Image 1 (tube, rainbow, N blue to C red):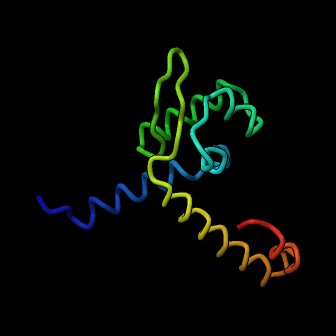
Image 2 (cartoon, rainbow, N blue to C red):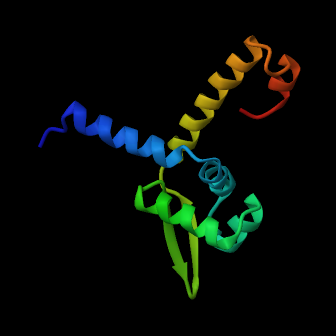
Length: 114
């Protein structure tokens, strides 16, 4: 079965909405180095366990993260690390625009991670 262009565009738009939250982007960055439990993620991003769990549920439901259970603990990891690369590319473009418009000093842009 051939995927229509409109079908993939709709999925793309949905994924962008899912990734369009600071907390979820922070979660993706935090678990890049390896799988983490909800408690570890919550502490790492400075959010409550409840809020972190809600974000993780949305990320899991949209195939951004995957889970592994060990006893009572569920560990989360990125399902497609390429998504994190895409997000970083977007931030790089945004940072370059901010430098050009004078919103941020060029030296700050080169020192910070995109």
